[in-house]
Image (cartoon, rainbow over all chains, first blue to last red; front, side, top):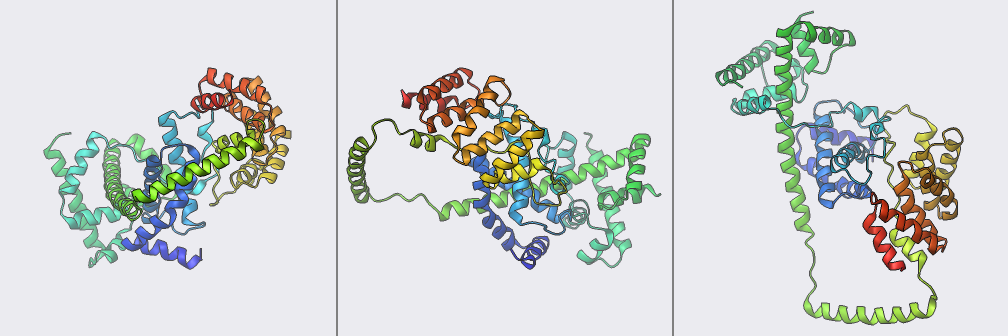
Length: 189
Length: 245
């Protein structure tokens, strides 16, 4: 794949293109499923894992950890997928029967190792927090998502959200956080 | 440094190593700071979870569209009748041909039906920013990319300094993939003899290798051991045994 194509993919994903999101999903699907079939899970699990790998890839494109592709998108998906497949096999206690030193998987892959591949179930406190987060106004949700999900700086948020100054962003952010905290305190954990 | 700025830098992914140390220290000593950190970190996880769920449902939608675009085609009854008749005719023809051509069981065919390379489950290879230039990595890379001749030579080289069960198992696999079952057999037997972690897998691949070299008795004996062991490919081993017997 051309380098320009690759950087275009990242840029368009970051700008929220649904079309590219779907294209990338479709373009890499068959390759990934073929790769995953070697591990003897069910076809449904292969698709489920492909989607989860895609989510991790996407998240790291969005939060800026993956700034530039040094290999093709499919290579990243395979690499993430491998982590997920081993996790799944460990959970299913597949015939690999614990006889392999699975802890060594991923040793050589620094880039993907810096990604958060696991997505643990939310704790009770986090579920409560999520309820209140969803109850915030869209402007607050957007601002906090830019900061905590995308890893944007205040200055970047100012540009992305059409705020007049950095101070306005800071003030808005503190207000959103304050509202959130107050609402949670209203209901004890 | 301002505590608020420290948190800000942490969530904007721009902590310097020095600030990282400071953050760790504060987390241990300053409970108020820790509370604020935990709150913001929880918020981050909550937003991550929300975004992931939103994306997952989109992907499930894409998947549905793909499945709809490729419905399982059911041929019409008329076509099926003809197809069945043709298959039967073909089967009879082939059966007759097979009967006349082979005097014994088709070991090569059984081998091909059953052989599937064992996946690399011990060494993760990626082409990202890796500085790992080890012989082990090269060997597994050749293995995964089906460069079988190279895999044989690299695992052989590796075996000279690192004569482990894992290396022997993947060297045997590389021999099998390279259509040299006779070379794989002694390695697999060694693993079986030592009753190591790969022993059940070695029984299976050993049996297949014996099939390929036409040594049915030995294949049957290993398959029997594998069924008794029960940890790996038990159903496949039983089915193959039945076919051989």
